[in-house]
Length: 521
Image (cartoon, rainbow, N blue to C red; front, top):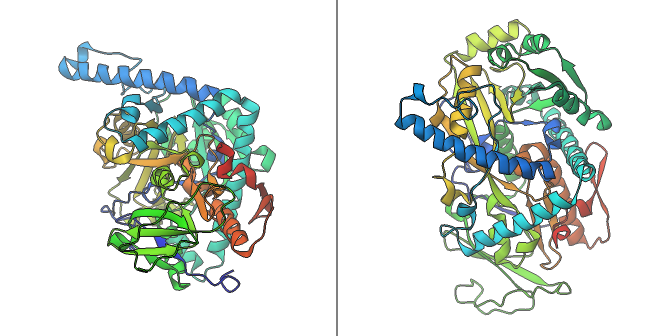
């Protein structure tokens, strides 16, 4: 709608590597993005979108996993102090494949203790209050309903991605560069788990097959390296895998060519943001000496401006702000008196990228000659809540875990068994790789209390739109929710009111209220 709505659009990218234009996952040296999406070559898997965390069973699992994690760390310390042969705790030993490793961890002291600021504590309390309310007061039916809603977003997301890819003149070259692959195999320790996974997407037409493990190994031979005594496989035929970093950089280049002002480094790092009344007149237009009056939080107030100050000292005025700052969104929302509308909190996970010694030509061409994908993995797989994908001929990436340990700059030293567990799985699946425990990198995702992203205008701060809370599903639903926030913003600018739904690519229509920030207040 660029011709219909003339506007100056500025994107502030605070990530130090956000403007990196050369992304090649065949190379071992990669820029270290802060954003989890840029680090992870995960698939846009609709099946993954249905694993809803906001339910009673998750609360029990968090408590159980936290206890196991704490006890496992003490056991590992003891094993280091003493002769390892004398201390063999089979239940807690991180080398034991017979037991599913803990996924969740909660460090209350780090979330609420002296290392956290008052704003950080407040965001945790706001998140926890909403998460407990939703998880305790809603049953399995409501949780499944939230999962179905997210699945609809994921399906539209997939449609947008494929449509954009097919519309490009260099489609095959871009698909090859992104390591585009189709199909996904989820592995389960019980037949019941496999049945449940296979049935999850049936209502929306997602194709899946329960396969004998022998058939799954034919599709992806590396599954045979896993030592579990019994595994059950579900093949999702319509899931896609691609290198998210290359796609995002291609998208950045596209919007820049359209005239969007894309700012990085100091000019893209926001130092401060204020909402002021529209009627406030200032004499000094560069705002160096302006004392602005905070925006009233009355829902009836309709006029406002936003003053954005960046790290290079520049201050500019904007009519609308879309807050999409990942895990920092709730802290910025509090500055704008919108903290209750943005009850997200960082969920720490880990990403481990490994490389093999095979060359691109030899290994990739050999696999294609045999009818396999040119990627190191013919099919991405998941096992024990860890996702393993590949978007290049000599690399693969494992991602997983969900830890509530505080904000990024305070939580980097919080101990975790995740790197050890992830390294063990990586070396088992890829024995010829260079995978080590230290290869695992931390990534923080903005988790919503009800798993559904937070998208739309904040009713008490007109002009402020949120686009956050995607949790582990940024690459799975981000294109769809971006379409939603674009529709909401265009409606605001053109004066369209009372639309109840978003009409998304792929013919999918979703309820706006389910995404609205107002649902938490």
